[in-house]
Length: 88
Image (tube, rainbow, N blue to C red; front, side, top):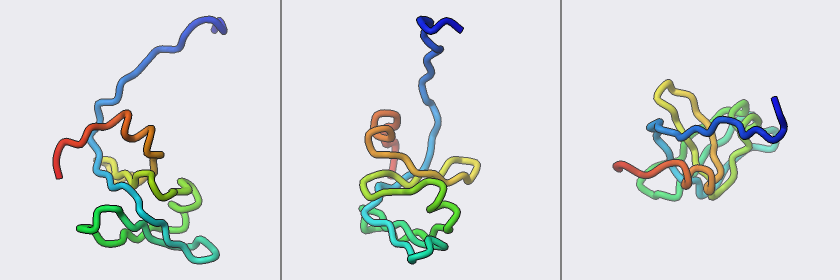
């Protein structure tokens, strides 16, 4: 591949469930924890140590669940520029 050749460009068309994160709670060993959403209508969401260590979620970002059940984290800027809210 030539260094001057631009890679193909893609646009997301996925639908996901997501909540903006207010706080991330963990124990000292990061063996388990919880995501506290900004939207107070939702309670804390338990997450595993594996999730915490893999995704390193931070307040201000988004807890994301894909249709196949995969759970992820996205920085706010990346999420907000790629997704538009469609319903509550």
